[in-house]
Length: 78
Image 1 (tube, rainbow, N blue to C red):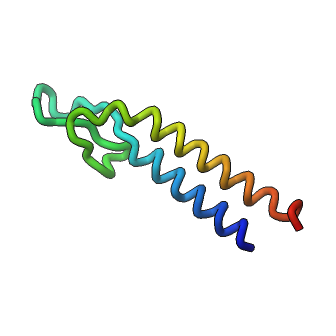
Image 2 (cartoon, helix red, strand yellow):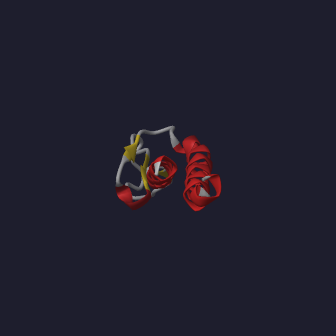
């Protein structure tokens, strides 16, 4: 059961990482202070944080895959 809990936690953290990754948005138009927002506008990122999109997506996907592997292989370890 411990691996299932760890796997589920990894999946949740991975999905949240992908959802909170900064995404370029032109919602403000020519505003100079506007940065970017996350997917589904859950979080507003300040200007200059758009570089973090790709690392956050890679880490999030890796966490989700690791969680799925842990949940799927629970019976093999016992």
